[in-house]
Image (tube, rainbow, N blue to C red; front, side, top):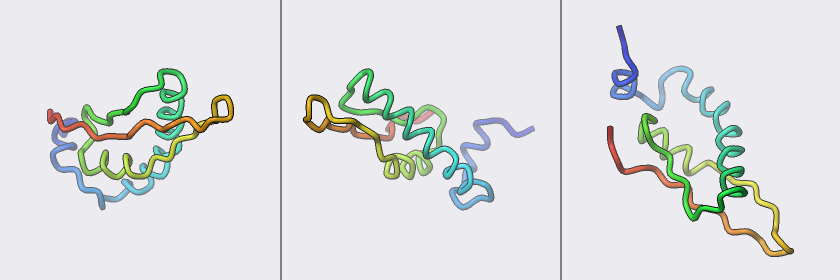
Length: 87
């Protein structure tokens, strides 16, 4: 039986289905990060936990946040970072 840790350990960015998953996940991640930025106003959002680093790096570089100006002043975006903690 293959567990989550085995899937993470053997993750390949070019595996079948990964590109499709990224295409489906990208707009959801954009929405979630945009909502976090609007409500909490952090300076950074960190992607981590069980997501493979190569996948987190790709998503972090591709997420474009939505932000409406506040009082006609553009709102700064939080940085999208990848956790350096493993395991």
